[in-house]
Amino acid sequence: MLTLLLLLAVPVLAAAALFWWQRRQHVAVQSRVGMARQDCEQLLELVKLLQQHRGMSSARLGGDTSFEAPLRERRRDIDAALGSLARTVKAEADMPRPCITHNELVLFRHRWNELIEKLPTQSIEQSIALHTQLIGRALDWLAALGEARIELPSQDRLPAPLVRNYTNHLPALAECLGQIRAIGAAAAAQRHCSPVARVRLMFLVTRATTLIGQAGGGSVESVTVLARQAVDSLLGTVRRDILTGSEVRIGAESYFATATSAIDAVYAWARHCGHQIGEMLDQHSRLASNETVQPG
Image 1 (tube, rainbow, N blue to C red):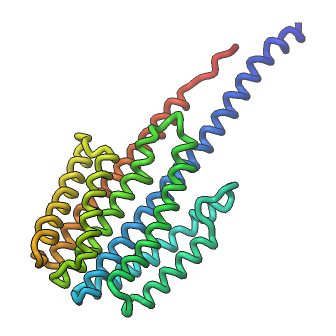
Image 2 (cartoon, helix red, strand yellow):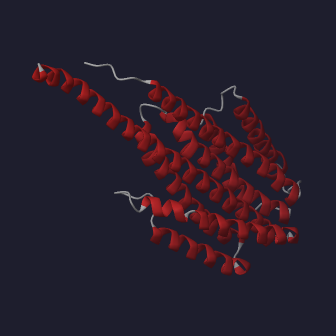
Image 3 (cartoon, rainbow, N blue to C red):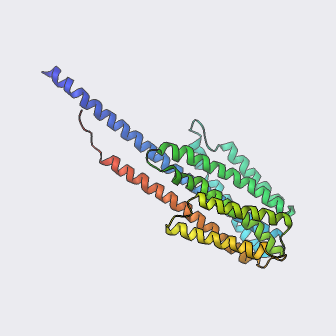
């Protein structure tokens, strides 16, 4: 009789053990994805700050001294944002293929400090190029984290387009607009747009239009509509006040504010995607918690 009871109990115990093992695995994955979202938020903030510093530097090098104080403030913000990445680096060090390493962050900080030292003697074009290199590296980290730590571990819980919007498509759109802000701010400060800058702006305007379509700019969600309207306003300003005619017809501060509103709207859209990711993961976690073991 005892033997029979043991034989009957084995499948039930095995099912229970499997359930709790799967539950622990699920909780571990949820925790890692949640931490990855925080890491992505920090990188989004770093990219945003670097883009602002690039635009302000262009205006300052173009002759607008009103950007002196904001530049100093932005540098402090960037130093703080780089410091916040220490936890990300520590967490990634335990991974088989880290998305960001300690040495990479040290090199990034070195190049950032080098940029600050050289900035007063740089041309506008050199400043934009140096900033853009750093921003590109941070965007690479963001895309790698999004794919390896959020998208792949959550294939059965999250739509891939949502994750890619959050860590790839929308950051790329914001960077395109950031370059438009930097080049346009310099032109507005100088009241003149060089032929090279004009060609670059025309290319970036076309690319921004393409990127917002790829990111789902046709959505009727309010955050998407607001972002699309803000981007359209910026692109219209570039076409009307910078690319039309021989003289730039907008001041640097006004132009910078218009461009920043568009970029902020895109970041709000990206963070909305991040919020949606969090809600979907929480919902999936609650459903998993309510599941019960069905004895075999």
